[in-house]
Image (cartoon, rainbow, N blue to C red; front, side, top):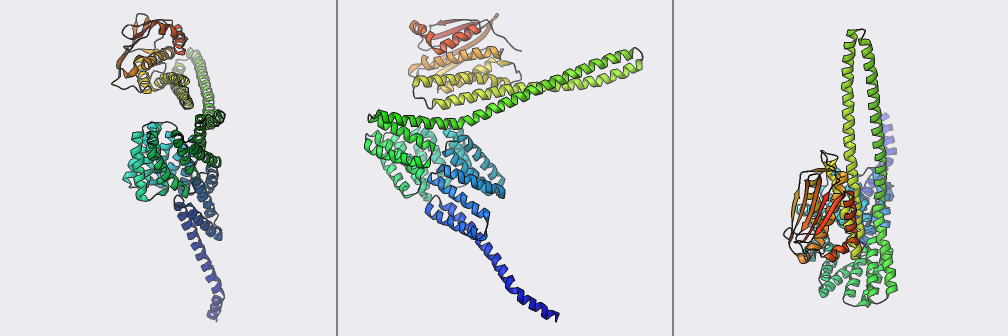
Length: 632
């Protein structure tokens, strides 16, 4: 009877059990389809964005069927990637940020690596290079956690591009070469093509067109093998630009037309903008201003939609030059004003946040240092006062009992040993603080030097540009002083021999002086000077050597520059001598109005120095310095 009852119950429940099992299987199937369509969509975006949208919609449909909120959130990632490819960078950034929040909640490290990598690309396009660097390093951290060394290579490539935009060409080349070597070992043809294109961009920006062109051609070859149509659009554009730079306009136009044909078939507004600008510039070069205007105005319309800062800057500048050539000066000036506004906003965006952070950090740490110093001094004073009192008590008691005196002496010994530990620690802390101050002063000076370098990119006037570059050199000479201080054991004095080597070699590098053109003869005694003496002497030598490099050896003449520093009696003798073309009496008289000469004159007075300029066998400047101070 019991068996019969159980069998009846089973028959009643069987449909429900089968239904539940079927429902569970359907959920698994729908989740699998949602993920599968997500993957298909992502890998279709670069090749066929319309098909990618269909896959994305299918992924969202299956995710909604089972109510999987995270799979639905991943739809935002796909849409953000599509908007990036279309050139809608602000919309792309906002969608990526929306998905990032969901990925953080889900603790999905794989997708966090992908979204931070994509945010790095988008913020770079929007001109926020500081954030772009931070995102790329963050993505590399995630990829490292995942053990995904292949994806880290893409971040290395992007870091190279960011440093290239910051004009930090050496760092950029290092990142690119590292990425290229690793991609060759991994046999990633598409990634190799990307790096070759970026290497071409790096050399092109420096005017090394003959070095850039082979990289672009190799990139096109690799993209042809992999049939990467989007990459071929870039390749033809880049190759055309190199031919245009070398005045081979027919070859340039042919490659631009190939790129345009690819771009017009794809829904990529940013890339289409770039090829319109290139064609507009080329037609202006060959005096076909009508065709130039058509393409540049098309580019302007697209930049209004994409809001890409670099593209706006580029097209406004091109339109300004076009209307200037056509004699439409008011229109040209209007576009020139818009160009300057965009460039200034890009510069401000990159630097204002960083300056604020540096100021806040500096002020906070300075207050903390002051508090630490005051606290340490107070502790030392209290300790010494306490010791004095105890010594007095010990002497009073010692007059009564010898045994008590011995006990007190023993206690005092222990306490003095503790005091010595405290004093030693306080001195070490002061030493660290002093090093940190020198380090931060050096960093702030280098930051100012970098700002001057960035600003010089916006200066077309050669006189103003030269003044900015000279100012940058002066700031760098002072930064070297503080760098030497915090790196050496002597925190108050500078080794003049080591300082002059770094200072003058830096000037030779700044003016791109070849080793076989101008030789340096450095005769500096082994002497250490304090900071107040080194700063004016360093700036004087910076001015004199810079003048020699700029004016003493025209037409790439060879020669010798001698810098001598000797202590003779109670005076410091400084000599800067070049065997160049020399300086006439009229030129010496005109020196009085230059900023560099006034700077030298002010510092000479500060050092109580006698200066003599002679014109025998080149130009020789001798100074007898009376006011200086040596350190141990």
